[in-house]
Image 1: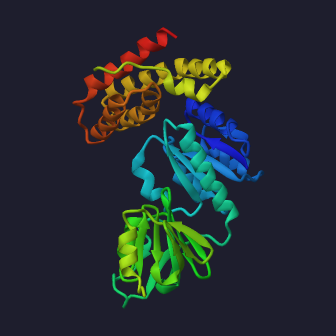
Image 2: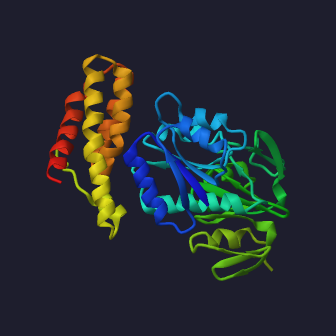
Image 3: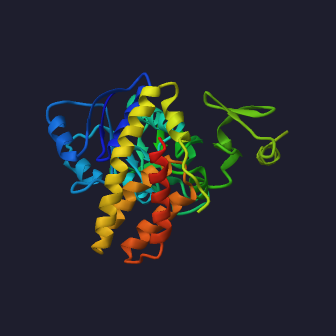
Amino acid sequence: MNCIIIDDEETARVITQQLCSQVDELNVIEDFPNAMQAIKFLNKEEVDLIFLDIHMPDFTGFDFIDTLKNPPKIILTTSDKNFALEAFEYECIVDYLVKPITLPRFIKAIQKAESAQTAPTSETVKENDIESSSNSTEQKELYINIDRRLIKINIPTINMIEAKGDYILIKTESQNYTVHSTLKKIEEKLPDDLFLKVHRSYIINIKKIIDIEDNSVLIAKDVIPVSRSNRPELMKRLNML
Amino acid sequence: MNEIPNLNYIKELAGDSEAFKEKIIGIIKREFPEEKKEFLQNYTAQNLGKSAENVHKLKHKIGMFGFEDGYQTAIDFEEELKKKNTSLYPKFMLILESIEHFLETL
């Protein structure tokens, strides 16, 4: 991925360059001490990824994003955790790194950027953008916000939900959605007679189970681990002969 | 203040690259006094909004030198300055002075 770095602090730019040098997939084309220089550059060149400091004098990172017609993937770098929610108002922002940035956390962000580029059937949506009004089987629909559109998911078509760091992956019969949210949050929106958390990273639709082994269940083509503590509840919920 | 600055983060980033380590320390040695000076100028002029921005920037270097409590102090001080409160100034200055002395040894 060709990338650029925008940060008014030279120390931060050099550190981000060093972190990029540890990842084979990344090629830093240029770095800029302010957003204006980067805008001029982007008028002529295309990049795949931008590391963008939010807190810059005169022109903030968000101001910068607002100037871009087709923004590439953006990873925010900041010393302020307070912008996290605002950050996810932007579809192009794939992650949010708090300085000082460590290599493991940096790599995780790159992986998110890569998956955002290579998963056309997955759509990234914003935290708090899951809406469902009830926790009973009467409620058949779950709405997620994609590009400021509310997309309806028919709840019974959900096969499973997997926690993936700061995101959850919702797998339905026909499509997958990557959502910036937590298992806990979506669990509250799902009918509990249909869904069960079988592992700290997985919620499954128990109607979709094809078979069960000792510590796993098969749903569609996915083998999902079942933790020992959750297995009794799973067995209780099944209509067994 | 019990914390003392260290180079753990920089060493981890540098890996085997002595050149990177020297480069980043050189940049910090140049940038840090400038950032501290700008903060003090704004603070002395009672421009607390600008001072908060300076603290925000200094926070990165405070974190880089391994301060954990100090990093939190910087976060609190930045918020405090936005509310025109300066009670954490002496505590914050101790952190800056500690880094300044440490940089002289490098």
